[in-house]
Length: 271
Ligand code: DGL
Image (cartoon, rainbow, N blue to C red; front, side, top):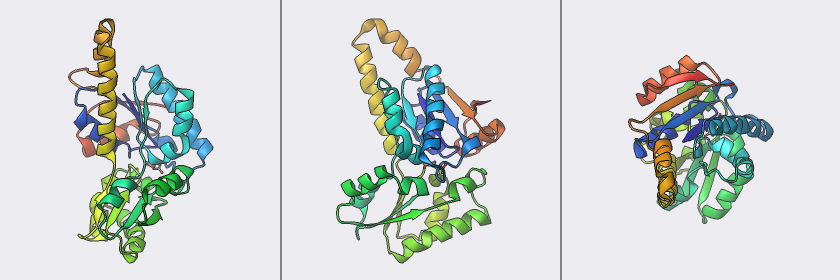
């Protein structure tokens, strides 16, 4: 399975995938050399996403997980057009579950400027806001700060305070983390927003969806006996293997994956 993000954020999805599918072979690409995506234009994000998908497919991954809300919004339709036979799972802000959960029907959405200005986000709100008040809060600079690997710095706290303030003013009772980097600073948001606000992200829902997809595709494969061994080799290595690639500094990714996830995979360069 291939997983990618603009950088370190997708590790929050990788963690959920690893928990759900402990025997799956996972290849993760962090495009940290080009992060953040959230302040780039769609063409740039699409070009990087294509390059990464081509790399993952050359490594024979059987599913691609776009562990990035920004790349999902800007490029998932293009990736699916280019590779119509490959299952591609994306992530988007969990507006639907947040609206269902909210008591006062006031929901904040924290995401990158690019995600919040996308057509995909507009369609998500049209489909799922269901009369609730949605307060979008772009967070420029936040993913870049998280990319440093330090999760409790004065700069990070200042950004979190700044982006939480309008949500507190709007009296939201539920906040969606609409960027895969943000779960790593959930404790700071929890402090800034206070104990009455519920914070939600979609990592586990995405992992559950991916696991269902894999089990459907495996049961289809096992209906054809001659393919069973191959599908086992590809999808269910044991013990699990995690291969990490970074277009930034590989040793930074190695250090962060160990610190945040306890993962000790080998890390290579990717450009
Ligand atoms: N982690 C990404 C997301 O989920 C993007 C952060 C960025 O590169 O701006 O949107």
